[in-house]
Image 1 (cartoon, helix red, strand yellow):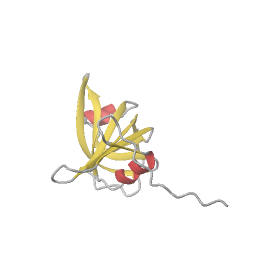
Image 2 (image 1 turned 90 degrees about the horizontal axis):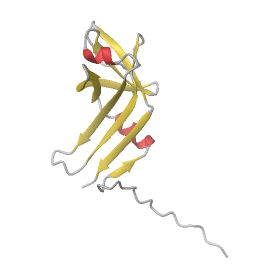
Image 3 (image 1 turned 180 degrees about the horizontal axis):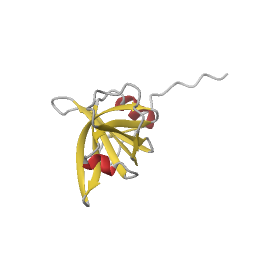
Image 4 (image 1 turned 180 degrees about the vertical axis):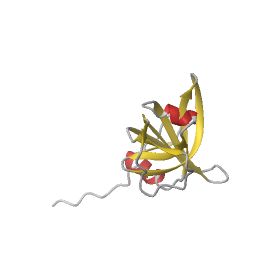
Length: 137
């Protein structure tokens, strides 16, 4: 006589710091709930960070940037990082997701694009490398 295997809850995978490692699907679900993130790029040989409103659409992070900005200049086939997060006020729990990819300027607006200025140009960061962590209190 055989018995059906019990479904055991899968323990989350932890990194060396004790943070839960998130899978790609979890990362994308969380990323879709955020509206503001940060783009890390290089300008004049130095790292720079710019907060942006974004949408997750068409397998990419999409956002606008003024045409004359260093961020837009970096979006011409430059490798960038993008990060979004959310934390409890007491910092006892939260998550963050990072996307690495080659940014590209595009003329097409993403679906559900946030409000922007008339001078904005559109930038896409394909979801090439996606990683995330969760801090559980």
